[in-house]
Image: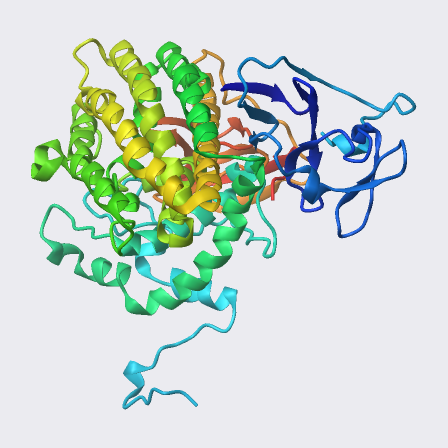
Length: 116
Length: 464
């Protein structure tokens, strides 16, 4: 296992092998690591729209499927956030990892789904 | 209908009907009143709580971590520490008869109910921000926790604390800095392991016995001279500092008391017991590194013969304690109690780092100001005048109690003389015609040397 460290004001997308995860701020203001790809066809949820409803869901931009944050957070790697410092525990030491900042191309502001 | 009938009025329990009523009921004791004494030698009960600058607390709110240096935070930390420490036994080293009234006031049963009401509110005000700073998510299991812990152990360098120790060593008056540091630690180290001992009661399996082993060491395995608090007393004595708990109550920074209060908070509320085990794992693991840094600072400041037994003992024993807490307490608890326990342990581990950083930052800010006093600049000419200064009078002998500057505050002495206190033996005397600007977030006290008339200027950003 290894630990990835990053500052959530500088990075919000974590790629572990073939899987991508994003830092998401939920309705309660808590920062979570959740899957960044849609369970439907693998669409980019970091470009999605956070629905302002109590179910805490994200609408995928590809097919408008709605994915629940509750589902997306399941099986996500362990993460602890302390202030802006994030630590992610990567269970597969051999997998390729990358950390980066992603935004909507049509929007200069950071994507709403990846609150920093 | 109440199941209790009172045969006489003296058995009636008075229940405060509001927070304000509870606060008044609690603080309205001589031991908590403002005092002309700066140092309380051999009296652990005397604790001035409110001060003239206290503006009340915003209820249903919470302080951000940055607001912990406000005067209201200072008062909140003083009050809640006094409530928490009613659970501990304090005795002076001389005959109690000299302080029997203070003793009775401190342990007064009538202060219990108001104290609980106050503590519930102040805990929300003070500790919500720590909780809101740490977020835990994902699919944690024992293996991932072990990897997270191992990574901490390998990479922890205590950078901010190391910088503080380096700063003290290079201050213009390093001994003043080191003594102020020891005074800030004294609030915790002189009652060492008391908060931890709150978790000894009850019945929760083998972890309970393992914690007891750690406490045996903390208490010097029955030998008073090796009890950790006794060893810290020796450090204080070696620098001619008072060694009775809370002698320097008036000089405690809010961020220093906050560290102490946090441990009382998580140890007193047993719903947070796993959080406590995470916190103590972090502390026992990090303390080896920080104690080595403290030894370096002590020897640099006081010479190679400096009394450092307290710190060197921790360098040795905390390696064992870290291992014992991890292998004998934390891992078995996670195996038995699963996800809830694990995430609470991670939370306590991280929260402990947050309160430790606050301690470091608060003291660093105070010492930076103290160091400025020795820069060779004449601070007595510094003043940013405001439009509406208030004219004040003070009588010789008064000590206005220590307080935090919620904003930059300027003092301009028109007649007489005022002494401004910022630390152990660190003060500036202002005479007629002299001025001083005290920066926001600095602890200070004012002692009136001769009857004085002065102007007070308030500028800058006001803290809540």
